[in-house]
Image (cartoon, rainbow over all chains, first blue to last red):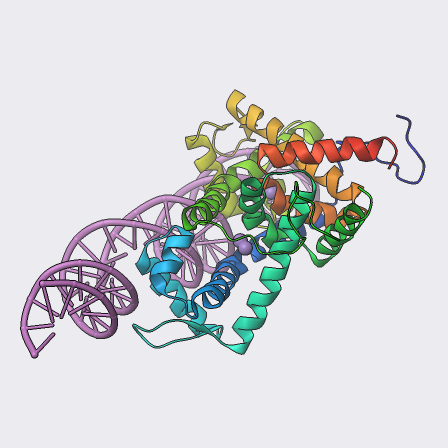
Length: 156
Length: 156
DNA sequence: TAGATAAGTTAGCCATGGCTAACTTTTAAA
DNA sequence: TTTAAAAGTTAGCCATGGCTAACTTATCTA
Ligand SMILES: [Mn+2]
Ligand SMILES: [Mn+2]
Ligand SMILES: [Mn+2]
Ligand SMILES: [Mn+2]
C-alpha cells in the first residue's frame, strides 16, 4: 500500500497535465474520429470479400446498422479517398491502399479483441467495446496489448 | 499451444458474428459518440471547479483545444440538457445531474488511465489514449480493468 | 474613472454522417 | 421474355461540432 519510489503513482490518482498536453489529447481523439468511417468500412469490405467474394452495399448496410443511402454516400467518399474501386450498381472492391488499410485495421481489431478476451470479458462485450476502442489505441498501447497477451499466453 | 476446450480461441483468430450483433456493436459506438461531448465537458468543468473554484470558457477552450465560440455553443447544449447552470458572461457550474455525470466520468477515466499505466505505457500516451477509450468501455470491461489492476497491485 | 484589453456571444459558414422519399437499374420469377 | 422484387442511387433534410468575423460585456490598468 505504500508508494514505491519507482512507480510513484497510486491507482485512481488524478494526473494533472499541462493544458496544451490535454488539448493535444482531445485533438488526437477528434482526428481518430475523422478516420473512423473509412477504417470501419474497409475492414468490413475486406471481410465481405473474403466471405463472399465481393462486397455489396446491402450487406454493408445490414452489418453497420445503417440505411443504404448512407452506404452509397460513404462509399463515394472512400472512392474519392482512393480506398475503393467501383462502378455504379456493381460490387465494391478495395484498391491497394484500401487493402493495406483494411489489413492494418483487421490486425488491430483482432489484437484488441484478443486482449479483452484475455481479461475474461465475454465475446459479445469484447467485440462491441473493441469496435470503438480500436480507433483510440496508439501503436504504443497496441504493442502493450500484444505483450500482455503473450505473457497471458504462457503461464497465466 | 493446443486449444483448451474451455477457452477455445487462438489469439488473433477472427470472430465471425451474426450481422445483427455486428450492427448492434456499431450502433453502440455511435451512441457513445453522442454522449462524448457532454461527458468530456462536465468532466473538465468539474476539474476546473476543483482547481480554480469556477470553470471559465477560456480555460475550457484552451484545454479542449477548440475556439471559444465552440465552447459557448456546447455549453448552451449542456444547459439545455440540464447538466450545467449558468448566466451569460459568468462562470459555469454543474447541476446535481452534471456533478453526478462528471464524477462517474472521472472515476472511469482514472481507471482506464491506471489500467494503461499498469501495462507499462507512459503517462502521456496513457492519457491520450484514455481520452478516447473511456467512452467505449462498458461496465463489464471497466470491471475487468479494475480487477486486473488489483491483481497487478498485489504481486505483479 | 476612462480607456484598453480580455473574455464571451452571435451570426453564419462548413463537413460529416445519419435519415426518408422518390426514382433507376439489376436480378429473379412467372 | 415480360414483369415483379430487390438493390442501388439521388435529392434533400437534419443534428453535431468545428470554424471565422464582428459585436458586446466585463475586467484591468493608467
Ligand atoms: Mn470500429
Ligand atoms: Mn473494427
Ligand atoms: Mn474523453
Ligand atoms: Mn470514439
